Image 1: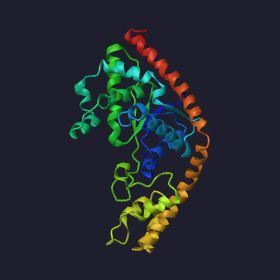
Image 2 (image 1 turned 180 degrees about the vertical axis):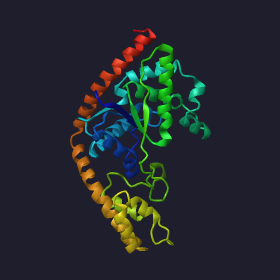
Image 3 (image 1 turned 90 degrees about the vertical axis):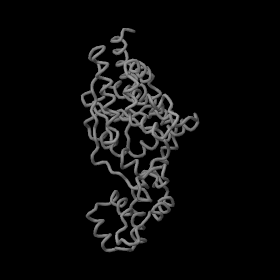
Image 4 (image 1 turned 45 degrees about the vertical axis):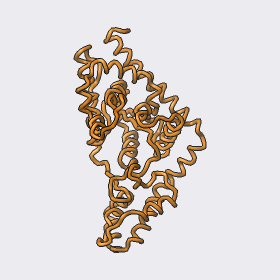
Length: 316
């Protein structure tokens, strides 16, 4: 591989919305097509097991996540797409890291502190989440991990664990860098808060026209403003602002016209994605083939690195 290695993991958590697309999914496809990276994208099903503890649901969510990414343009010829659970080296390396990582260090992780603040009965998987993530990252000689500013700690944990292992057993792990996506949009939901499934304020990425109409017409507007901020904030994702400003100025206060225009913009954007996904659904075996091919390639890289680790620690 002559290019840098880029790795990202995505948890299968349900139907994606346009906030997921503009906030993360689109960037991965853009990076794949940029020609600068060899891309590895894994379905983080073991990470998701902290939340999803139903076998049929996990299988369905994982299958649908692959369809989602293929529909938006992920190319298996350019990106290695695989399930985290298909690479056993990840959990094996996690245990090896567990023997050098301290509990006080893990207690500083954001996810643990958030769970603790909410008085949750915290499972070991949530507590140990950063170690498994470090194993996921370090197995593939990863150079960069695309993350938002709020996720930078994940990469810092991987770097720190790599440095500690290198110090104890000898140099073996590359120190990955976070690829901070400064231009990533925070997409507002229909109620003005950040678009989130937990808020119920989303516009589904593969929505039908009827779903788009229902969602857009429910967008909260400020009756005292000529330009409805929430409508405009979503609209500018689909149309250049230079065109949008003139249109909103001409139709100041005409919320119905503005929302109808947004409906057309969203539907024209989503329609080809929706149609492509419907075609992909017809061939479920294709998803299995793609994940199988990806697992073969991922395992080749991961097993090679794990064997190096085993030699260093004296078990091979």
